[in-house]
Image (cartoon, rainbow, N blue to C red; front, side, top):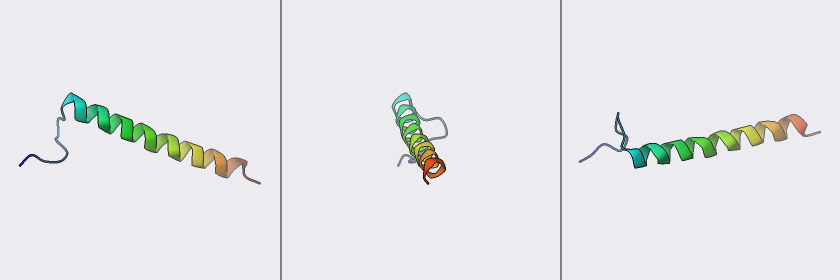
Length: 39
């Protein structure tokens, strides 16, 4: 069985992790901005 997260992931998995990380980061940034600008 292959591990879910390889220490050295292949290109496809690396891209997927990057996309997921970017989505998570954007969500956090939007929530922070909304909290700062909320009255």
